[in-house]
Amino acid sequence: MSATGTAAGAGRRTIAVMVLIPFAVALTLWAFAWPAARTAPRELPIGVAGPATAVSTLEQDLARHAGAFEVHRYADGAAARAAIENRDVYGAVVVTPGGTELLTASAASPVVAGLLREAVTARAPQGTGIPVTDVVAAPAGDPRGAVLASSLLPLALAGAAAGVAVTLLGLRGGRAVAALTGAAALAGAVGAALAHSWLGALGGNWWAEAGVLSLTVLAIGSTFAGLAALMGKPGLGLGALLVILLGNPFSGVSSAPELLPAPVGALGQWLPPGAAGSALRSVSSFDGAAAGGPLLVLALWATAGLTAVALGARRRIESEEQAPAAATPAPARAG
Image 1: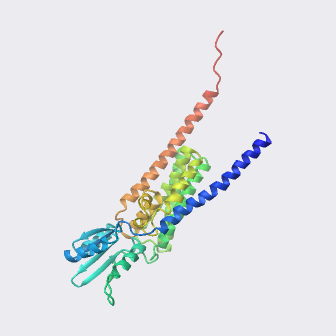
Image 2: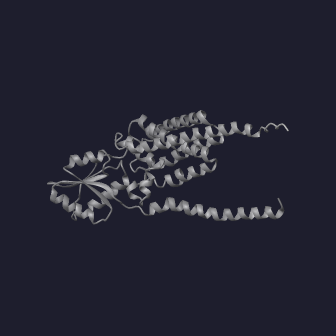
Image 3: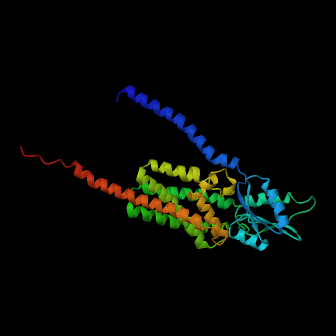
C-alpha cells in the first residue's frame, strides 16, 4: 500500500473516532438521562374501595390527572389488600365510615409508595391526616430499594462477562453451554448469599432468589455468546447495546415501569434486566406473585441464546468440513 493510501486510511479512522465518540455519548445520555428526566405516572395501576358515592368522587379526582392512573375498583379494603399482595395494583385508597386509608406496597416500588402518599395526603383537610398502611413493606435491609436497583448492573456485567469469555476462549457447542450454565448457577448462588444472607436486601425464599439471579445471568450470557456465534465479534456489541445500554435504564427497577416514558417502560420489561428486576421483586417480597411473565421472558432469552450458540457451532463445523473439499484440486480429465 502506498504512503498516500496509508495516510488516507489513517485520516478516515481519525474522523470516525471524532464522530463516533460524541454519538456514543449522546446515545448513552439519551438512554440513561431521558427516562429519568421524564419520570411520571403513566397508567399506574391503583385501587379504590368503599361506598359507591365516595369511590366515584375519588375516581373523578384521579381522572383529572389525564393518563396518570389506571383505577381498579374493589368491594372493600380486604379485596384491595389482596390485589396489592398479588401485584395487580401498587396501592389503594380505601374509604370507610371511619375515614380514608391509604394502602401502599413499598416492596413493589418505594418511589410509587411515596408518590401515592403525597398525592392522597394532599387531599386531606388541613390539620388532619390520612393513615397509611404499608401492606407489603420493603425488606429491612433495603427500605428504599437501592440495593435491588443497584444489583441489576452487576448481574448484567456478570452475564456479559460470561458470554464474552466463552466467545474469546473459543468454546463451542456443549462446552459453551456447560460453561454458561455453570457460571450462571454459581453467580446466582453468590448473588443470593450477598444480597439475601449478608445485606438482608431480599426477604423471600433463598433458593427462589438464587434461581432468578442464575436465570438472569444465563439469559444475558447466552445472549452475548449466541449473537457472537451468529454474527462474530459485532454480536458482542449488539449484546452490549441491548442489555447494558438499553436494558438497564429501561428496566424501571429504580422506580417502576409505569413511571417511564412510553414505550420505554413496556420495552424494558421485554429485555433481561427489566424482567429480572420484576421477577426478583416478586419472589423476594410477594411469594412469587406475578413472577410468571418476567420468568418466561428470561427463559426465552436464555433459550434463544443457547440455541444460537449451538447453531453457530454447527455452522462452523460444516464450514470446516467443506473447506478441505473445496481446497482439493479436481482430477485431470483424460485428453
